[in-house]
Structure formats: structure tokens, C-alpha cells
Image (cartoon, rainbow over all chains, first blue to last red; front, side, top):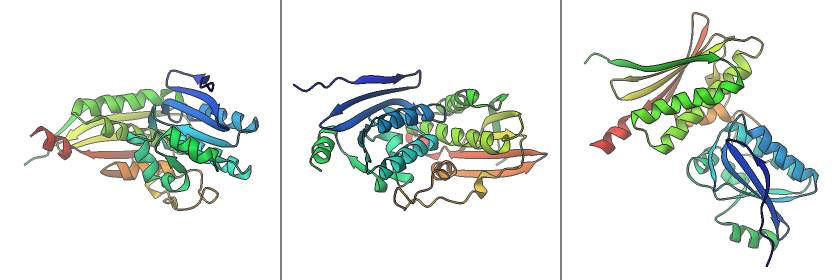
Length: 127
Length: 149
């Protein structure tokens, strides 16, 4: 059996980030809130993983209850960085207000969004 | 019918990022008391955050001051959040709408805050009065009333 353990990379009062790698895909799960206070920490976490050589990211937002434009900005900044390195940022677990904010901002059309992690892993690892 | 405006509550705190959550919680607590559902409350939180962050970044970029938020209802039809600062004149509604159709490389980082706020609120007004920026977020209560009937 594959090791499915998450590595807790960050835990604050309002946001928690867990990361694990599977089938060559860097899975990052974010819980809580990405707002103007927590967005820099989220961006730093992605930035570190990118500088360690990770290129294909699946961000799981199923535990995210809130995202503001500061969070969208950190996502876009990371996506631009990854694109330069021929990497990619994909999403799964969109729901509620987070999904609504993605739709309004046009993020639905610039990012690959998967209905589940299994579907994402199958599609991304065969790419 | 005369307009009945009832002020529910008010908060005034120094304008800094450490107080962001207090401002947001104030708005969301008031929204909850009005009976809005969880989704609408999150949208109200977002509009409040975007307003506060803009004030910090622009109106109070070079000066310090306070931000005052007042929550009130009008004729029990509208929930109104008035956000006031004494910084330099800054009208967030004058900010150009971002192009939301480009590719990742074409998309500009920023400009989404005001855009989201305008999309999510039923109405947003700005006015400059007595050296203050006054931004008003208006949320219709019609939807709640319908559900309760």
C-alpha cells in the first residue's frame, strides 16, 4: 500500500495546510480561511514546494470555508510562477462560497478543476 | 411610509491588518443576527474584508487612523454596512474592472477585490464627506423575508 500520510506543513488558528505526494503529484490540502492575513503563508508554502522542484500541484479545497481576493492573488501568483517552470496548478474539492468566488473571478476557466482527487490523480498522472 | 433606520451597532478600531478579523467578525455577527444564511454571511464577510484591505492599502497608505463600521437596517428591507475612514480620498468603485477572461499569463494579479465586492453585494455606494471616505454595502433582506413567510 502506498503511503498516504499527509505532512502537516502549517497549522494556524485560521488555516491549516497539509501536503503529500502521490503518483508524482504534489497534493496540498488547505483548510479554514485564506484571507489577507493567511494568504502570504499559503503562498510561501507553495513557493517552498516549487523551489524544491515540485511542478504538478493538486490543491484540495474541500476543507476551505472562505477565500478572499488576497487568496486568489496568491493562487494566481503561484500559478504564474509554475507556468514559467512548465508546471501546473490544479484544483479539487471546490464547494460553497469558495466555488462561487472561483466562478465569479473566472478562475474556473483558467485552471483545471477536478470533481475528486481520484479523478484528478488518474488524469494528471497519465498526462 | 416614513423610513425607519435602526442602528444595530458600531465598532471603531485603529486601521491595521491585525484588526481585520475583528472588523469581519463584527459584520458577520450582525449579519447572523439579521437571519442571513451561512452563504450570504460569507459573502458579507468577503465584501467587508475587501473594503478594509483597500482602506489599509490606499486611504491609509501613508497615514494612520481609525476605521469605523456601522451596521443598520432600513425599513427592515435592507441590511446596511457603512465603513468610514479619514484617509486620503479613495473611491474603490472607480477602480477599473479586471479582465477575467485571459489566460494565466495574461491575468493581472489584483483588482479582483472590488470586483467581487460589487458582484456579491446588492448595492455599493461611495461618498466623500467631511474629509471621510464612506463606503456603504447594501444587502437586501427580501430573500430572508420570503423564506420566513
